[in-house]
Length: 267
Image (tube, rainbow, N blue to C red; front, side, top):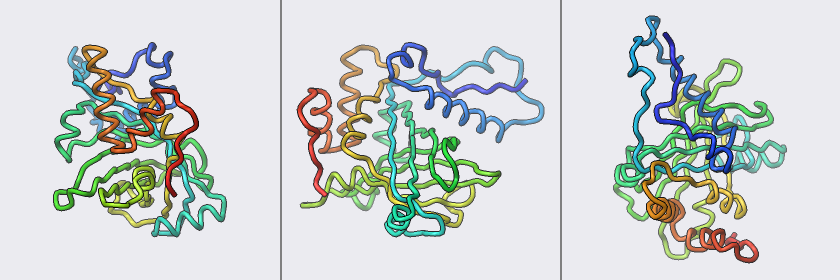
């Protein structure tokens, strides 16, 4: 017997109907789970036991969707140069990411406890709607640099039988006078040939998140396994401030209140 199933239960129809999850994200999750099983399956398959279909019970968690896009160039290893060349050639790479964090407490307290990233990539030289496999999302401060917060986005995928690994990170620095908006919304990205980021770099660029995209991201946040509305509300507030830092005070409140024009970030 061969069985493809999620590690944790998927969102149900009410979440899909209410827009807390979308069909593209569900398809990406299924593709990722399928690739994971096929890459690790054994010829004898799985035992015919009730436990085989059992999924794990989740703790209080968070999920959200995020789309970032920017100039990207193949045969370039420097992200800023790749962005410049990509824009000039009209080559824009879009990362449509769905992030799942099944245990928000461990995620915040343990730098090695990463979230799961699924989704797809649009990039004209490669084509559109390229599904990703099981990726990684993480957010932590390096032990030797407490004023630096790293946001890591990594998504492996295949194209024409070749493995690729898209690896990006944001560097948010708590320095006087630094541009908080740019750090929090700018993803310096490299494309590696192979199944992880030890492979040779074959492309680079900079992906960004605009003000409207940031507000849209906040509206996609959903809490899993909350025991009450109060716990759900507190989880959203705590995570958003952990994720966005000081930007949350402006953009989260703006989205929640439905206020006037979108605040303009510094450039």
